[in-house]
Length: 185
Image 1: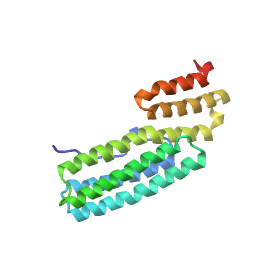
Image 2: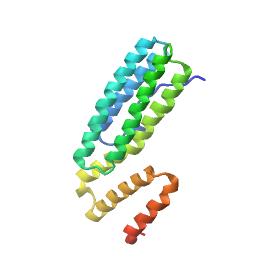
Image 3: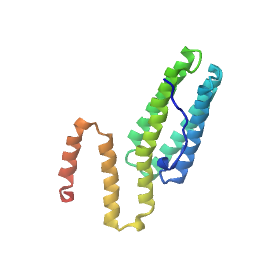
Image 4: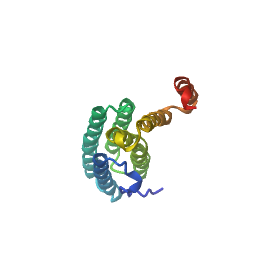
């Protein structure tokens, strides 16, 4: 099976935070350079070099994103950091794969599709947008009444929490939320 591994930064990936969006554009450009090297049947050495290039920027971006979260007091930063660590492990798996084989294969392309492209797009649309919304609300409290701001912050945190809880644990979280917020029903 052949995978179409062309990716671009488009409106679906915009978080609304200029710093995050600019870094995501660069990250996606680096991923595309890596994918192009793989699709062209470039040598193992060139594929590893392009993976190094991607790995270096990923590390920079994740550190910047986590520093930003720390600076604004983002409540989900520990889980966000764990997701970044998962991605770093994926990069290591890609290195191992390239070292074990002569170069990129169809199986390698499948790994990249599932573990880099799909992961990144899902991460941006879920985790990074949540951070951007939190920052916007924190920096622009005058754009909505105080009670609305509190409700938006609370909803953002609750949405984030529900999005990160396994389905079978969701009822526990709902119970805790209802118990702590009876006036929200």
